[in-house]
Image (tube, rainbow, N blue to C red; front, side, top):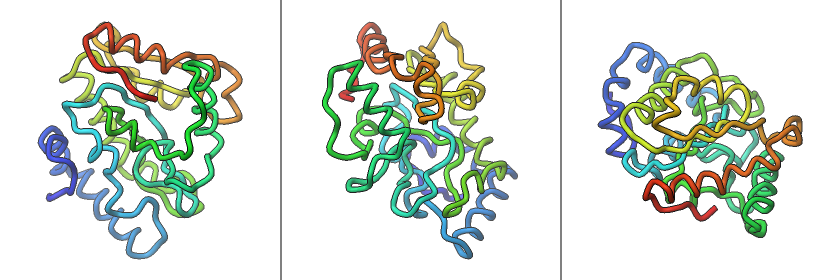
Length: 220
């Protein structure tokens, strides 16, 4: 199957694209785009990979679903296009960066600037129906993104995994902590951010770890 994804990822994930689950998933996704309003745009489904080649991944931030409101999702977890108001979780992420690194609020919520530095902004499910959270869960995306995490965990070293909330922590439970840095915190949503996400210091911890392992830091 010819999947339009960045070349290094295409090579690393080539086995997945031929598996029955992925063929079934592709058929489902195609039919959904043909009959429903789906986010993100089809050409942006693999945006996280296209901006962050496999050999450049330094940090992984796991989300669950794309945003399901118009004009928000563009293929990067937690990110929104310039001009779109910050969703509550993203606002809390910026509040934590402000607190952790004494940085002012950015002018927009487009995290492409992180992706281009080696931050893989990965949602567990890469598509969603408009206004229907979780509508594309359990169709095969989770199997695919599990394979992505396994490839990173097994074939790379010194990757920082930011695992916010029980879902992300469960999804990445198999990562070897002797080989990578796993940072755990509650999810940044307003429901849980005050239980430990705000004050977690993940952004400075990630940069300290990268520096200690001879890697360039992220300009958050």
